[in-house]
Image 1 (tube, rainbow, N blue to C red):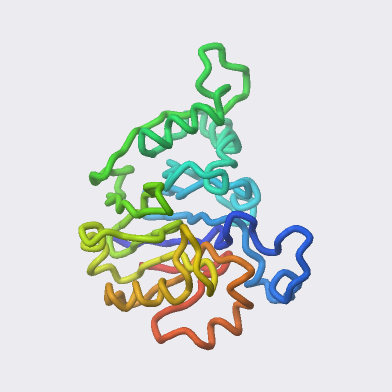
Image 2 (cartoon, helix red, strand yellow):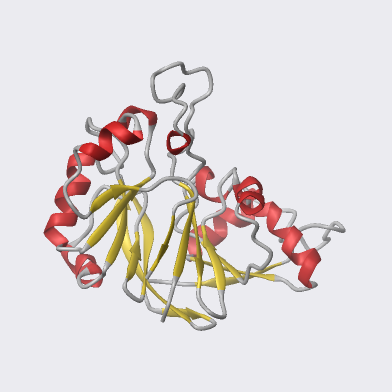
Length: 255
């Protein structure tokens, strides 16, 4: 199956530039150093889905000129991954149908708290219309796309990555069990979080992400969920091993 993946956002929870920061990265004129919150758009011949709807979701949909969206898949419930969910109602209005949402039961309960008005018995006119589909650590399908969940650990929080064909997407990971690593083996492209150079309690550092790619022997890797502490895109890219690149907003790859 041919896939097209568009990196809608590649930044960490604050985005880049960070509010009120005047570091070299936040003041860079290189557009690759401007990073909205992390999300991707995945397209096959028949299906279009996004993984995560962060605070920049509306801007990302407009910037990528997305006119069709079949589903939203969530990795976890943190604000930088769910805060833009309300804006799926634009697709409700254009199609006249509900939006399919795929997430674990824990994430579903968080969405019900954060967007309580969507799930209320007395619904206000114009609110998003969602069909909540609960997933676990077993393979599921969205139309013609088969997704294999990969459970990783974000400090102590389980987070879902996903493998679709030869493409694997993981964000907000600090550790991956040996069992879950086996689901990644054989991927042609791996997207992995690489927050910064110095240690972090819940994210891979650049060195840890590089070592994980080498361990899994992936042909091509792209790093995402990047903070301004990592450095300027051009400078960091020069020191990366062959087959590893920094992703940037607007990057489109085909698998």
